[in-house]
Each structure stands twice: as structure tokens, then as C-alpha cells.
Length: 482
Image 1 (cartoon, rainbow, N blue to C red):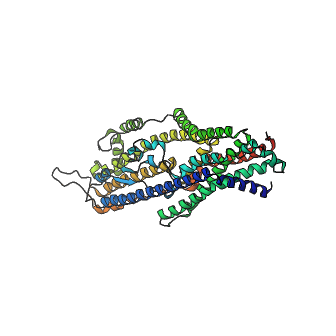
Image 2: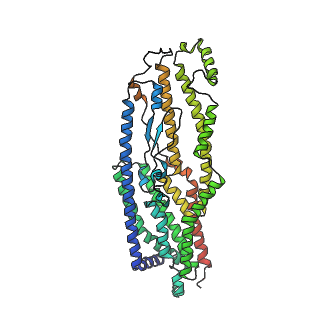
Image 3: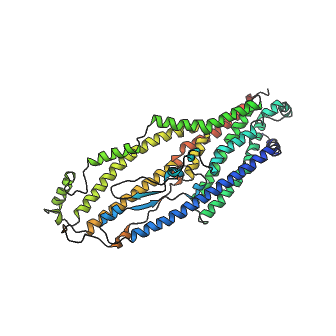
């Protein structure tokens, strides 16, 4: 292929497009939408992060300032954790509005993450939000189809296609030139958007950016560029095989509806139908029924824990629990926490397996829908996907278990086994022990884990890009002028 011919064809396309006032108007509207989406995302992240930090500091202060108490009372007093957002989540909201923002931690009980924005929404949230990623994923493809639906079909209708080919222009050069011309027009918006996102990201992090975040932003840009190449190629192919521009436009609009609306909605419903997940009530009931069978750790004379009691008395060669070198109730509480957490984690893993099967249906359709692939990759790279939410829940549960067992350990080591008299002051320990609980440090998913989770999305995008290159090569040899 001759590069200068491809360059001339691409320049001719974008110059002709920019002479059209409607195209310039659409570019202006898209630019304003991007500025609005970027600003609202930036503002939303900034406000939420400021509120989170403020309340987390307040919760920590209240915890450490609690007076002398019994450790088990502190375990039930609980601790409040607020979910930190990944800095790039202002770019793509993903599941942010549905994830919830805080969770209350206490002994023996796993609470859900509460106070999601969807929970306070009037219902309009189901129609989606204007984010930078949403515009790139849905409106830019529509813009490309509007620009390119007649890029070759109009040449055929005006009989200029024969003239071009008779002058020595090859089909490969024509197709490549049209695709590059469309990509250039898209980059008129895409490049400023990425620069704007970079600037806002810097401002959100006070220029304390990590290499991991830089790399993620690079992968985001690369992902969307491949996506736009796929959309531009589809547009040019459809225009090339259509006899008229009208039929080309109808086909492209149909494809847009199929990619953006029909396939994603159908996939979600189909996944839920194939792998129905228990409701929260059913899940809680199942866990509770299993817990009942394991006894009550709050009752020292519980039959289920009698075996533990007898073994302890035998090992330490004592006759009563009061003679043990540690607090017996604290030990039983620790064992009860271990058992109840094991039951919850086992059932939660079963629930996650069902969700994973549902998501597998969505991911597999990325091979027929590039929108699904770029959507999954975008949310994963910005830390607003389902896997990030599950990772947060698992880390919170680990921290809750750590809190409960720390209080049980403090009870074992610092509370006497001697039974209290009715008028005796309740057993307590010094408030200085509350500082033994470390702060919760949320660890975002690493890039290696991220790409393992989204291997299907990455592969499907590459298959789409390479497959379209093959189709373009085949089409250049078989397509007819008429």
C-alpha cells in the first residue's frame, strides 16, 4: 500500500467532514458534554473523598477515646469503615453508585455495605449517568457512524468510486484511508479528553501519582483507541458493502442498538436465568440455620462447646475453668468467631461462584460485542468494577475478624476467670488497648490480578481488531464497484 495515497484519502475525508456545519456542531456538543462529565466526576470524587477521610478520622478518634471497658463490649460496640475510591473512578463510575460507602463491623456478624447512592436515588439512576467513559463508549460510536455511514457508499452513488479506482487507487488504500480519516476526527475529541482527564487526575491526587496509576491511564487510552479502530472499521466495511447510504445508515444504527442496548440487557437477563442467585433473605437464613447447629459461644455451658471445655481441662490438668491460666469465655468467644466466620465465608464463596457464572455469560459475549469488552476493561482499570467491590468486601471481612479476635485475645489475657459478685464492679481493661487495633488499609487490585480477571475482554478486543483487519484484506479483493 502507498502511504501517501492513504494520507490523501484520509485528509480529504476529514476536511470534507469539517466543512459540514452539522459535524462541527456535534463536535462542539460532544466537547461540552465531556467537560461537563469530567467536571462532575472530578467534583463527585473530591467531595466523597473529603467526607470519607473526615468521618474515618472521627470514627478512629471515637474508638480510641472510649473509656475503660470489657473487651467483648467493645467488640459489639463495633467499628465503622468507609470505602475509599480509586482515583481514576471519576473517569468511569462503573458500579460506584451501587457499591455502598460504609459498613459497620461487629463481632459474630457480617453486615452489608450500606448507603449506596442508588439506595437514595429516585429511580432515574437506572437510565445511567453522564460520565466520560459512558460518552466514549456509547455516543462516540454513534458519532463515528454518523460521520462514516456514507464514506464509500456516497462515492458509489455519485459514480466517483469508478473514477478513483480507474486512477490507480487500490481498494486497500481506499479502505485504510477512510478508516484513518475517521480515527483522526475522533482523536480531535479523544486526545483533549484524555489530557483533561490527566489534569483532573493530577489535581485529585495533589500530584502524588503512582506508576501503577500512570500505567492504568495508559491502558485506558489504549483500550479506547482500539475500540474506536474497531468501530471505524465496522463503519467503513458496512458503507463499502452497502449499495446506498440510506441502507448503510440503517444497518449501522441497528448495530449500535445491538451493541449498546440489546446484547448487554439480554446477557444480564440470560445469565440471571441460567444461574439464579439466592436473595439476601435466603442467604442469611441459610447461614443462620447452620450457625444454630454449632451452638452459642455466649453460653459457657453450651453442649456444643462442652467437648472444647473438657479438652482444655484435661490439657491443663484442672477441674474448673476458673483455674485455667486464661479467660475461658474469651477463648470460647474466639472459637465461636472462628466457626461462625468459616460458615459465613463458605456460603459467601458459593454466592460468589454463582455471580461469577453470571458474569461469565456477559464476558463471553464480548466476542460478539466489543462494547462489552471495553466496558469491562474500563471499569476494571478505574477500580469501579464488580471484582473491586468483592475485593473490598473480603478485605473488610478480614479486618472485622481481626478486630473481633483482638478483643477476644485481650479478654483472654486481661480478664479474670473469677466469677463476679452481684455488687462487684464489672471487669474492664485499660482504654490504651483500643489503640492496638491497626487502621484499615484498603489495597486496590493489582494490575496483574486485574488483567487475569479481564483476560477474556483483552482477548476479545484483540480478536475483534485482528479479525476486522482480515475482513478488510478479504474485502479489498472481493468487493465490487457496483
